[in-house]
Every structure is written in structure tokens, then in C-alpha cells.
Image: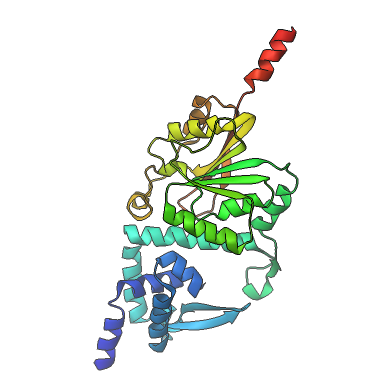
Length: 325
């Protein structure tokens, strides 16, 4: 009885139940669990230690990482299903229908996507049979393709913590990074300092009132920023204003979805956009040659990334051509 009481006290913690549910779906390491759960790494490690001491999870070391997964007894007992496993299965099914559960599942899909982008797997379904190819990452490909571009002036609008800013700085002549939050901008500057990036100008500003001159950049990026904008049409119009004639506005954002929890958890104002809606926003800003396509999509992931672009017409050039005729 004392052992049962201790076990139920251990499983009476919401964070530990969330953690166990995730591990039944995928083996994960501490960093991945920290990103999914939104809990400090020290807290995740403490929960893992308690679950391991209780015999509910086991460790597996691979490639310099320590992964955790449920103990075999939680998946199936010697004489069929373990009673505790059955109890947890019912609890996990209920959790998956909650706002928190859907958020955890969405972040788990992001972890899976990142794994796929950094290690491409081939051959059989057994882990031991698969050939892992280190270095085959989309980050490396993006940097390689960036070297084919001319030294452009880029505005990263709604830059957040600066990851895309730093990537763009590798091939751009100059990047102007804009965000409304001074705290976020401070973290972005720190990242750029660590990466020894020196061609970025940091500015505080709103999406619908950019602190940039007209016709001052070649490319304006809005990466996962538009669904935070109070007025998406105004934000796209501002992006179009600051690019030079012949310049491009590039938007990466979510396709319309039904995950209402992102409003409270992530501060999203809009639940993504329909393909035709993104197209209409870019055309409404006066852009031409508008294209909208799927940028990323995974089975089971509630979020699909759309990529949209448009060109600012060079009316001066058109005027010269008309004059010549």
C-alpha cells in the first residue's frame, strides 16, 4: 500500500503526466522535452529523475545524447497489458483532447520535423538498419543557396529572437531587423554577438509602422509574423512600402487552422490564412507576380507553412518605356 500511495503521488503531477504521455509517443532528450513542455531544464531533469527512480522510464544513449522512453512494463506486461499501462493510456487519451495536450502534440511534431531536416534516414524501418546521414540539413542548404544571391539589403520584419536574421546576414549585404519587443531584441543582439555577426542594424518598431524609409531595402521578410499583426493588410503594405521598385516581399506564415489554443499560449491574433487570402493581401499592397505555395507540411502536424511572395512594380521603368514609344 505505501508503494502504491507513492506511485499515485508521483503521477498526481500534471507536468510528469504530460512528460510520460510524450515519451509514449516518441523517445526524447532533455532539450527536446524542455522545448515542448515550456518548463525549465532543471525542472524537466528533476521530473525525469523521479520517474526513472520509480521504474517508469529508462534511458538510452545514442550519438552523444541521452534519450528517455517508457519502461517496457508500461507498454505491455508479461501476461498482457499492465493495469497501470491501461490506466495511463486512458488518461493520455483524455489529455490529447485538451488545449494543453494539443499544444504539446504540435510542439512534438516540430521536434520530429527538426530531426528530419538534420538527419535524413534511409533503408529499413528498424533503427539499426537505417543509414543516418549527418549534415544533410536544410540550414546548410539555405546557406549554400544564399551564396548564389547578390549582396541584397534585407529587412527582417518581426525578427523575434533573430535566428532568421543571423541566417540572412550570411549572404546579405545588410540586414535591418525590426521587432516591437525590446526584451526580444536584446536576446537577438546577444545571439548575433555570439555568432560574430556585424552587418545587422536592430530597430524597435511595429509591423504596421516600420522605422524604415521608403524604397530602402531589396527584400522584406515577414516570417511567422503576420499572424501576430493587428492589421495584416497594413503590415503587408508597410513591407511593400520599404522595398525598392523591383524588390520583393516574402511571407512565411501558417495556413488557416483551428488550433484556438495558440491565441492564449502564443499570443497569435489570427489562426493562419487561406492561400487565396495571402494572395489577396499581397496584391492589395500593389505587388505583382504574386505566388503562394506550401513551404512545409507533415502528417499529423496541425500546422502547414505557406510561402508567399510578390514583386513591387518598377513604375519608373515602365514610364520610361512608354516615353520611348
